[in-house]
Structure formats: C-alpha cells, structure tokens
Image 1 (cartoon, protein in one colour):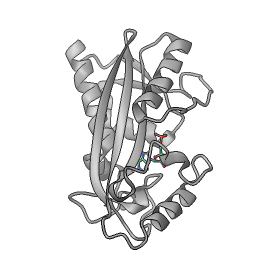
Image 2 (tube, rainbow, N blue to C red; image 1 turned 135 degrees about the vertical axis):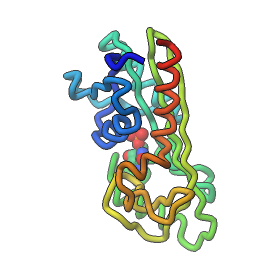
Image 3 (cartoon, protein in one colour; image 1 turned 120 degrees about the vertical axis):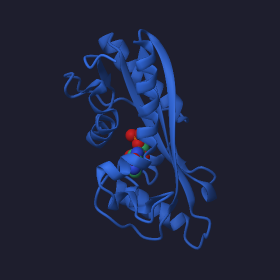
Length: 196
Ligand code: IMP
C-alpha cells in the first residue's frame, strides 16, 4: 500500500491518536483533527458505539470532503449487563472524569465475583464517500483497585486476557499487542490494502 495515503482521524483524544499511530505504523499518514486545523468538539449523542462513530466521521467528512475515520470505544462489563458501554466517558456524569468513572464502576462491582469485561472499539471509515465499519474486542477482567500509571481511562482497572497486569502497567507496545483499538485498526489497514 502507498505510504502517502492521507487520512484524517476524527478525534481530539491524544491517547487515541498515539495508539492508532502505533497500531498502523507508517502504512498510512494519519492526520489528527489538530493537525488538520479543525477545532471542534464532536458530539456523541447516540446510544450505540456504531452510531456515535458514524456521527464523528460524517461530521468531519462534511467539513473537509476528505477520507477520514473515527472510533468509539466502550468498556462492556458482563455483570453490569454491558455497562458502562457507550456511556464509558460519562459514566459518573462529567465527561471525561476518569477517577469518578472508575470509582463508580468499582462501587457497582463491589462484592461481585464475576469480574469479566471487554473493551469494544468501533471504527467508522468514510472512504470515497462510503462508510465502512470495523470492530475490535479485547476480553479481560476488572480489578478490585486501580494499579499502574500508563494509558488512560479505565486502563488502571482492566487486565487483558493472557496477562496479569493492568493495561496501565503495560508499555504502549505491550498494550498494543492485546488492544481492542489495534484489532480494529488492523482491519482498517487490511481494507485499505485491498482497495489499493
Ligand atoms: P470515547 O470512545 O471517546 O467515547 O471513549 C469512551 C471512554 O472509554 C473514554 O473516556 C475512556 O474513559 C474509555 N476508554 C476508551 N478507550 C479506552 C482504553 O483503551 N483504555 C481505557 N479506557 C478507554
């Protein structure tokens, strides 16, 4: 695949940009919203990851007319019937208040022995005017207390299947080996390779 495909990643989350760039390597020139000179907060008003991802990619496509993609991710906990899911960022109210979100999650799971959970990432790609969806899932479980300082969001309480450390104890390269976001990004790259 040509290394000069330019594609806008519709996010303001610097962690996501870093993780996607690491997952994709130099197979694709990913431009963040900041690098594209776009300064907007795209709403996530829907009740599915898929609809929110499309909201973000189509908003940026309308603005720029360029190929672009977005992603929406949720932590889906088995004992909580899939919560916080699409509400992961605003579980405890304030958008992006990570500490409070983790606190609420641990309170809801207090005394629960079934700690199974997974992260699910949905990527919405708008390529030559058409939408394509890709999904990546990382199974794991929720710890009783947060540990580790890397990563973001729920990383300190999530242990991926196949490891004993939380995502926040892993280096970016190690997280990438297990990550939901990387798995979805792999599919995005394969799709683009097939279209070249
Ligand atoms: P959104 O995709 O920006 O709506 O993100 C939803 C929320 O899920 C974020 O605010 C984070 O708290 C959390 N989240 C998304 N991806 C990850 C991840 O890779 N690790 C930990 N938390 C994440």
